[in-house]
Image 1 (cartoon, rainbow over the protein chains, first blue to last red):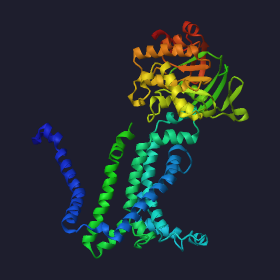
Image 2: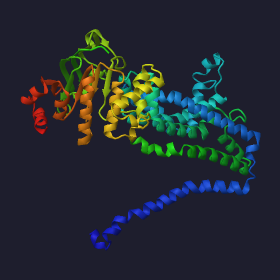
Image 3: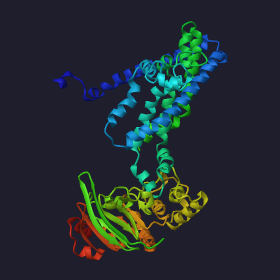
Image 4: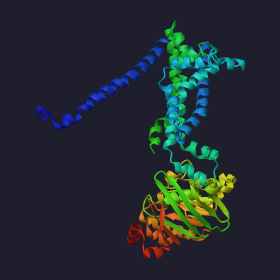
Length: 275
Length: 242
C-alpha cells in the first residue's frame, strides 16, 4: 500500500514540481548558454569591424532585402490562401492545408532540391521559363522564392487561425451597412486580425532571414549576388572563426531587434487571439 | 425614406433546421419575434438581412423584390437597405464609437467629415454623445447597445432588425434601453423586427407578435391578444413571468 510508505499527502502532491522546474532550468540553459557564449566570445575575441567589410555589408543588405521581399510575397499569396482555408468549404481543403504547411516540417535542403527540380534550367518549368528569357535558379529572385517557400507557412497558419477565431458577425454587420467585400476586407477583417497579421509577418520575416538550406541549394552562394548573411556565416566559418562570430552577432542583433520592436504585438498575440 | 410595406414568405433549410414562415407588416409597425432558443428567431432576421439565402418564398419591401428564389432574384445584404443590431452588438473593435456609427455612411461614399458630423448627432440623440471617442471595449453593455442602434439607424433603413437587443443587460439598463427604443421606434418610419425573451419588452414595443416554434409560426396577434390565449408553453411561461 502506497499510503503505508510514510510520505505525507503534501509531499506526494508536490513531488512533480522540483523535477519539472529542474528540467525547465536545464531547457532554459540550453537556449541561453550558446547565445551567451556567442556574445561573450565575440566581445572578447573579435575586433568588431565586421560590418565595415564590403562583403559583409552586401550580405547583410541582401539578407534584409530578400527576407522583406519574401515576407511581402508570402503575404500577397498567403493571406488569400489563409482566407480560402478559413472561409470556404470545398473538397480537398485538408489536402490544401497539408500542402501549405508541409514546408514547415520539410528539411529546407529538400525544399531547395524541389524548387530546383521545377524552376531549375533542366527543371519541369525550366525550358518554358528559358524560352521566355527567365532564368530563376542561382539568382537573387531564387533566394526570395526559397525564403518564401519556407517562411510563408508560418504566416498562413497564423492568419488562418485568426480568421477562424474572428466573430463572423463583424463582417456581416459591415455587409448590412452597405460595405463592399473589398471594403470589408480592408476596413474590418484586416484591422480586426491586426495582431495576428503582425505576429505572422514577424515570424515569417525571421524565418526568411535565417533561411540557409533551400537558399544555398536553389540560389547558390555567390558573394554579392545570392550570398545572404547565414550563407556568409557558414562560408566564413570554414577559414575564420572570429569572422563567423562577428557575423553571427550581427544576425543575432537583427533578429533580437525584430523581437523587441514587435514585443507588444508579438508577445501579446496569444492572449489577444483568445479574446 | 419611403414608407415601405414588408411582405415576407421565408423558407430555408440550414442543416437539420428548417424555417417556414409567412407574414406581412405595415410601414411604421414593430413586430416582435418570440419563441424558445432554436425556434428560428435569429434565422428569420438573418434571412431578412440577406445573410442566409432563401430556398423558396419571396421577400418584398414596398415595390421592391429583395429575394425570390423562383426567378433567381437575390439582393446581397449591401443592397437591401436594412439596419441590423446583432446580439452582442458586434461593434468594430478597432474603431471609435463615432466611426462605428459613421461606417454605413462612409460605405455609401459620404465624406468623412460629414459622416462623422451625422454620427455625432445620432450619438447625441441616443444619449451617448459624450462617448464618441471611446473604443467599444471601453463601453458598458447599455452604451454599446446605444452605439449599435445609432450605427443601424444612421442610413435610414426601411427594415430595422434587432436581435436580442436586451441580452446581457442588467435590470436597470434593460428598462432604460427599452424606454429609449420605445421613443426611437415611435419615430421610425420603416418596419422594425425585434426578438426578446421578456414579454414586458414585447408589450412596450411591439404592435404585433409572431410566436415561433420549430421554425414555424405557432400564433400571431397583438401582444394583448397572444397574452390572453398563449398557444405555446414557451409563450405561456413568458407571459406568466412578466
